[in-house]
Length: 154
Image (cartoon, rainbow, N blue to C red):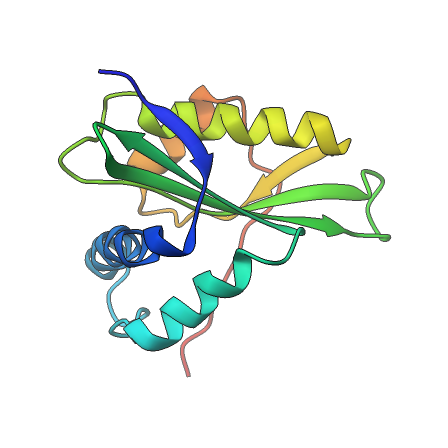
C-alpha cells in the first residue's frame, strides 16, 4: 500500500486529534497517574496553531485517502548547545491498526529530509522508559540515549 506524506491541513486536525488520543491512552497504560483526559478543544487549538508557524512542522501519512499517522516536530535554537540549531521530535503517532507497517519510519524519514533542507544539526526527543516499542524504533532509526528525564511525586 502506498503512503503519501504531506503537510497537515486544517481539515486533517480532527483525525490527528483521534490519533493523538490513541497515543495518550497508550501512555496512560504505560505511565499511570501522569496523563490527564484529553481536552479536545484545547488540543484542536494547539494543533491548529502549528499550521501557521514555520518553526512547527506537522505532517500526516495518508493511505487510500485515510490519515494513518502524523508527526509533529519543532525547530529550535538552543544557544547553550554545541549543536545549536536542532529539531525536537515531539510526537509521532500511527493508528494502532496500522502499526508495524513502516509508517513511523516513513514519517521520520520525511522529517530528516526537512531537517536537511533547514540545515538542522540534530534531532532530539523524549521517550518514556516504559515505552519499549518506541525506544526500539528510535534505536533502529539511529538515536542514542544522552540523558534521563526524572520526576519526583509529592
